Image (cartoon, rainbow, N blue to C red; front, side, top):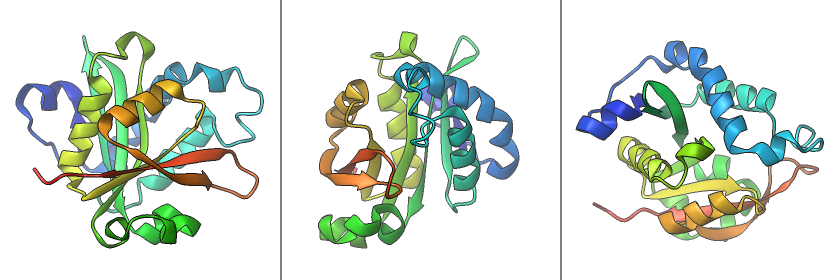
Length: 191
């Protein structure tokens, strides 16, 4: 499913898309948004070795497109993409890996959304766009739990996730020699 920001903001309609066909042409735009919202990673020579780079984002999105239920939301202002988020329903074993026994039982048994990316260009931050993108993903996937990985040093992201209700569940490494992320978890309240 692909949701466009101007469309869901105006009329809350959801648009089904052939993601395997429609998302790849957007990947360069998504990568530009991601790069704009993470300048600290672009200026960090170690970021690419940690898997935090534009080429890695391309690989990540392309790989995640294969997950059933993949949802991408894109926010537009004045005809230009200014933010995006994507997620998909996933199993606790896939998402939590070795931390699966450390998360609440409900997160291991109820519908789980893995939030992979949420990025907004700096001039558009602090205007509620990230919150609306997150809300659209929750609406489209309808999870009981949502989880994401955030760099502890990403203070703007950490602040947003705290406002959205995410709580720290433990440290997480994608690879044995990879960077340490904060595993964050949200129990989604029934509407």
